[in-house]
Length: 238
Image 1 (tube, rainbow, N blue to C red):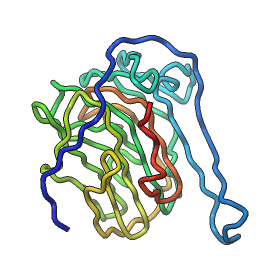
Image 2 (image 1 turned 30 degrees about the vertical axis):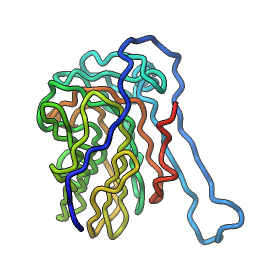
Image 3 (image 1 turned 180 degrees about the vertical axis):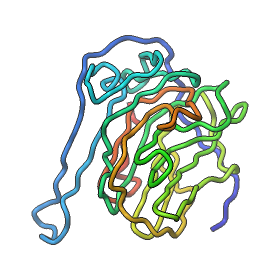
């Protein structure tokens, strides 16, 4: 496919914070009864990042001092790009053959070049990552998948987006392809042989091995056990 330079605007951050009460969202959405009985039930896990930070659960380990901010969609969490992260005893893509990972976030200026925002799976074996590369004023997306010996990064430095604004990204993984979207627009699409990941943990704000820290804000992450169309992505309206 042709990979030409593009830039899509996000939404400017409202930078002042307040706390919210804990609500951890874990949903199950089931297919319509009109659909084939052979079609698998669709599951989704939705993480409000501020709720994870406030949960005080033994399954959530807080590293550093991630903080609350008041964003256009509600409270979000700020990661400082140096020492802030969340480690979760959860792996929502466990055994999934097809899935969509979405995130609403606001990458800040002044962070490192290579930043890992979400890591699910093993530290260095089978895993899925949402990453960015940050320049002085812009960033570009990297959706990374490792399945057995098959490792692929969907990344193109020509697809630039502004730092310090809110954006939506989606990484769609199927048994035979990978696709990335930014703000509802398809960026990259590659053939890929994927086998389900069966073990691991999750981290937000850094890799599981505490490398490549993320600087910026994260509002919400959602994992759905099917490939979604852009019209079904999480809404950024407010």
